[in-house]
Image (tube, rainbow, N blue to C red; front, side, top):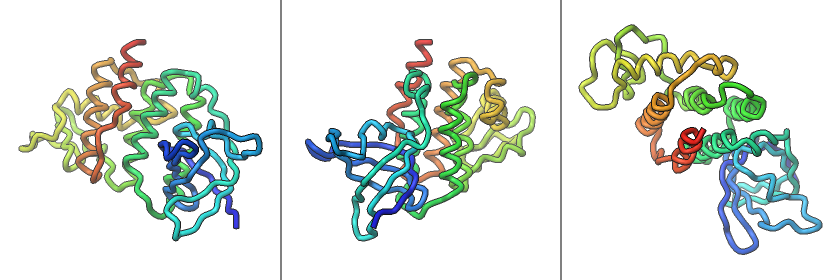
Length: 243
């Protein structure tokens, strides 16, 4: 029996000469691994080109709880992402975001709110014309709320430190090493006021942006188990350096 579901492509790896494994976060089944032919035959209804990272697709699938790797019978693009694919900055941001999601989302029950947030984020990235360099910062800060570890922006005070362990601002310098100094905390407080709708209004220098993204990822490593280094971060920062 075929079932329909939407999915957001996270990652793909070769499985054999003919097949690859695509990891997809689906609306109805949570994170799922699918086997996909690596070359498209004349009669194929599953185009490998649709499985680029962060693409949103609608799929007709076979889903058996007893099977570790599921099968896709037909795939359709939910909405075009032409600008994301053609724009080198957006493309690198998409790769970075997809890798973060691949690291953070475990196989589990579906989460409608998270899925809708991710779909909306992909649309924002595709349609954004200004403030694109801030997109991944907004994305990461908003994403953690779905994992129950959102930072407490309301606790900000002038001359305070942001405690990465407790997730809040404090006037007393923490005794451990996982905190933002006063200058970093001012930048972080600005970030907490950002959204996709207003991200074009915020400007950061390249060193500020590079530093704050590394500290956000430190926050992830502290609060989310088995969160590893993001390999595509170096590529993303290299793109910004070249602009």
